[in-house]
Image 1 (cartoon, rainbow, N blue to C red):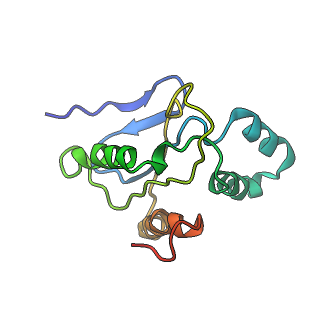
Image 2: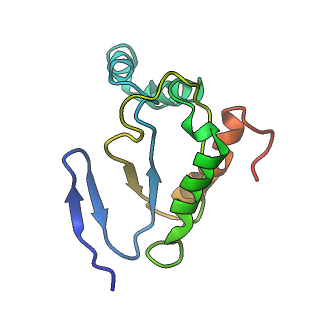
Length: 145
């Protein structure tokens, strides 16, 4: 039996764990967006333009190459799909292998993930389109699969 926790926090971001809520969830590698880069974006970019600046940085290929390795990408894919249909239902997902090798020291994942409630059908459609077309936007493929 699955136990739902309601509002939880692991010391970073608050999350809402409950059934029947559709959420968009993003996990990032620890070195994909360094704190000094985020601080620079915050100090030089108007609030409305920050998401585009963050996406542009993430798509520019900084950080480690872990997800570029088929064996690691496959392991992450299996982990995502392991409880699909049991503890959660994945509607769309992608693994973005756009990072270059810079060394193997430190954490693999950022300490927390980002989640957002899906407000309505339009928000769900936009979120699914974003996830499915993210590899196209990053130049990894010509069309979404």
